[in-house]
Image (spheres, rainbow, N blue to C red):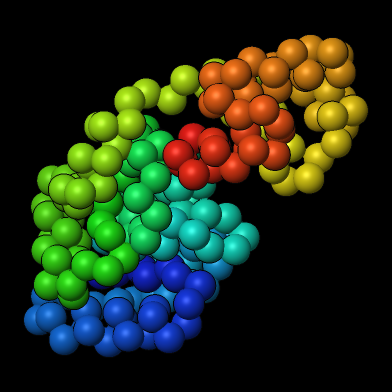
Amino acid sequence: MIRILLADDEHLIRGAVAALLGLEGDLTVVAEAGRGDEVAAAVAAHDPDVAVLDIDMPGADGLTVAERLREAGARCSVVILTSLGRPGYLRRAMAAGVRGFVAKDASTDELAAAIRKVHAGGRYLDAELAATAMAAGDNPLTEREREILRLLGAGTETARIATLLHLSEGTVRNYLSTAMAKLGESNRLAAVRAAREMGWI
């Protein structure tokens, strides 16, 4: 029996997916979470074989949760569910050790197949999501540029960003200008939005 943790902030969808997976003879949902920051404790308490994580959750997004599980040495494999075909997400997911990447509108059969495959040590990538990621090319932003755009997107002022990152305000502005040029955007908010849409921050 493959033990599954299911994390999705949409209660109705989570319940429906749990019920449908429960109809499979070899799958059982042993824990559910509605927030990303609840997953680590649920993994520790229930020791699932596979964690199925929605990419967009309050508390922490699915990719951040996957990164934290990997850092903590959790034994479970991770499958990411997403309705967002952002190319940067797939690359980040692979870097975080995610073994499955499934579109949220996939059938229960497809999700079950993905769970079985990653549990057996394989990988499962939705073909359309993978093709979109390959077509988009590599992330042009440096880690520092991504960090600054993430902070800016969270509403942090330039002066505070400079303090947090131990940089001068001028240096922060230079990083922002470079990031805006790479993204082809004329203002900071548009640059944040573009980077988010590509899944690069």
